[in-house]
Length: 246
Image 1 (cartoon, one colour):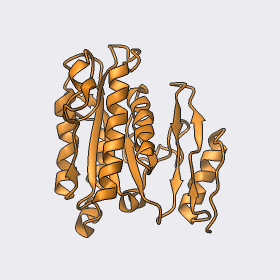
Image 2 (image 1 turned 90 degrees about the vertical axis):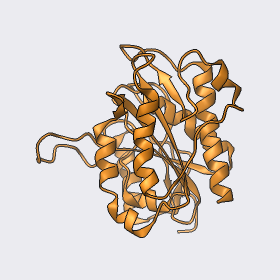
Image 3 (image 1 turned 60 degrees about the vertical axis):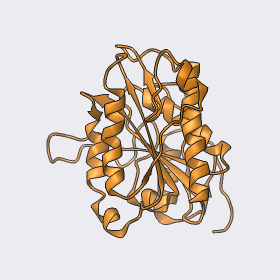
Image 4 (image 1 turned 135 degrees about the vertical axis):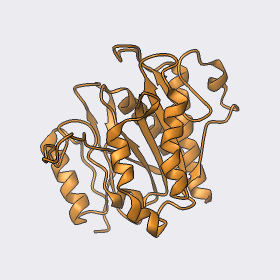
């Protein structure tokens, strides 16, 4: 129980093993495990961290891969602060009450649990914009966290936000604001991006003082710019450093 297990997650079967580990507490942590996903071909950390280890939860929803890429860069920033990044996603939602989503997603990070939120030292949430609002799958999960609110599990924990849009003025800042609202109710400490980050002043694509953003283009094919990547890493590092001071 006190040793560190580390492995390269090669396929969905291994992802199931990671899920089983987390659910059954068979190891203290899976540290810096990495997988390349076919959709984005971008490495993304999939971590299973024990309760005693201080970590930052990066919770995202991604449909076409842009916010997934941002989550990867943010996780790198978190690690430069000396903390570990726990990357999680949320399942799609269905207009019917029938269960249609497998327990383990075929691609990407494994699904978030309330234990992930309870055990984190800080949280960073990300979503593509939907008419200036966060996407429904992320909101659906956040709407289910009233039991954590009753217990105060996120009080005084730093919280950051990031988003991606298909158009230059597609509601980036309002989407980030929509993700702030539930975390304000939870008592988290809202964290943005200060203008001391020169990339925030130089960017000609995404990037806001509310949090990192990305202009992905109408077909979501545009790569993250250098400034967008810099701002993603800066937010991760800032949240990690603040979590250690709070």
